[in-house]
Image (cartoon, rainbow, N blue to C red; front, side, top):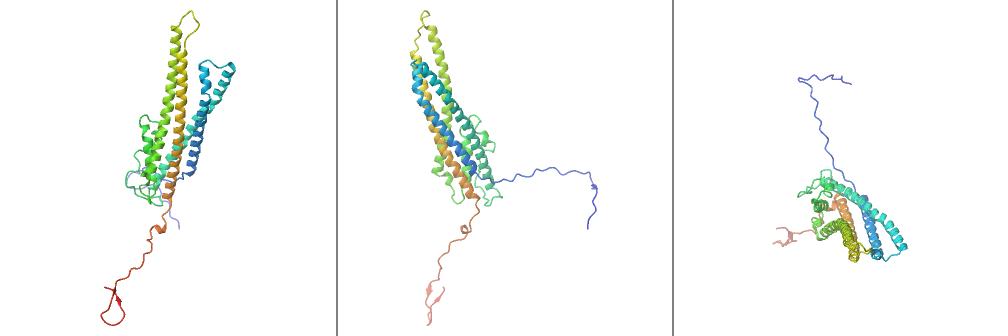
Length: 313
């Protein structure tokens, strides 16, 4: 039986539509394994590219010295220029790989934080009430902390540390604060920060050194004998050789730090992903069933009269 359409609104007052209320965002769990593998692969390729670039720089150091002192022939100069032109794209490739690795890691970190919110929500198979505040920073700092000046030296570490601590399995409380995990966290962060300090600071020092060398060369030419075509630049040659040596040493240290950061970051990614997957698994029945205990008997008491002994108080 059908009912007639009620028709237009005929209430006592004017019609007022219900205010729009957006539906709450339901957290979802997304596995981290595939994204972690991509990030780790990019880290490994980036570190390998930095090591290869470091080896090429040291192989060309001898020719750089001879070039500075004017001991190279025209053929050797052409060969050196071809070597520099060939290693330049590799250096650019390392830079592109660093950008790609950073993007993949930030996507992994954002997803790992979302997973933490899901694991502590009522939608989780094993909902848990956090005993303390899970995150010290808002979600925007997951990305913004890496680019904001000054706070970029400790905010990213706090974001990663909070995700790691909130991902630890309930069956092993405090494992994220163990010495092993703390060593991984701080080794990764110190090596990563030191890498960028050397790259940025060393690059700035190299540019300043070149400017100083050009200024000193111009001053030496102006202060020389105008009637002579010879200018004593031996000291300037030594300066350039020391500058090239400093650049090579700085890049070598940066490459070693990048390898250390890649290894420790890879271990952290795998550990956090494993913990979150362990928290996602539903609890086993044996976790709630106490193991069988041996039977307990009451002490034996002899009956005062004849017959079998009885049990009881």
